[in-house]
Length: 422
Image (tube, rainbow, N blue to C red; front, side):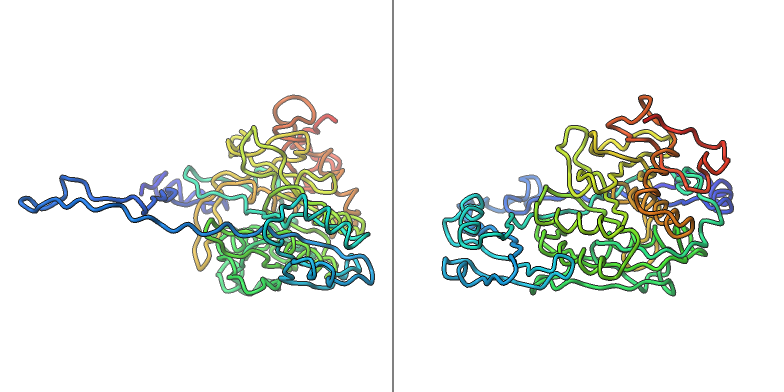
């Protein structure tokens, strides 16, 4: 592990408020099923014994799940009679409907299930219980100065908006979050193990991290309501549509001004219903564009028009190499080599559109809480005041350009940033 800069430079950066840290390498995953010692490692003179490879018993694939929004007065009994397992069901206050998570009967595929549910429960809405993933990566590289990149001012730190976030676990005892206005809720994961706290703690610290810490949050005086909606799987942390449906309901009922969603996955009509309800309630919605790369299909919820899709750029304002692109990308923000809080204490450098999204969430919340703008007006001002990057005007790589603090907006008399074309 090497230090990128001499001590004098690091001290200067610290005095300037710049984030600094060491480079971390991503661990390499090694399959153990076929691992064998090499011939050279065997003790000399010992006979070589050849044994047949053990045949691993493959698990039967898990049956798909559906998430269903029932019409008023409907019962799940017809589906249970048809062989569907009811894994969980809850009233959704936002939709004023009951939502259920179901396991399909053996031999039934999702398309068949949708048709069957529509026949048995007319007026209901059903979709695959899709999975959504955090958009982050461990990274290496030099120091960055993220808040300076977007023209964040000391006065901006004083705003007190109410922000919501949906993420993995959050550690309220991390030094960056201890003493901050943070409320952590966890949706019922139906007996599944909760995901770890690394990703959620990092995102929370970017939003409201202690102003005296190594990397202060953008809005250290804000009220943050974090909803833990992710469970642990063999292939990493994930949240299904049913959990996200419930998490959004919690935040809508809490009357937050902005919801940060640093995750991505497939389109889902059931989840979209609640996203539309959140927009109609006057809540600003921000999501990571995704880390699938330039050729990836649009990821959701970022690609829905109700949501501001955020991509990541580095300290030179170059696009993050793994960021998704497309006409839905709305704004760019720092998201490469950011010093973020670790799960227990300290921090590490990370990259991803997950970490760019909080910059836009903070700027949007600042416009709403301090300047009294609606979510739509605050969003439109961010679009007008973004520093144009790449091709003139809005483009599929950077959207309208680099997000700017409302305090640094040309509309407020500042000449720091140029306005992007529309």
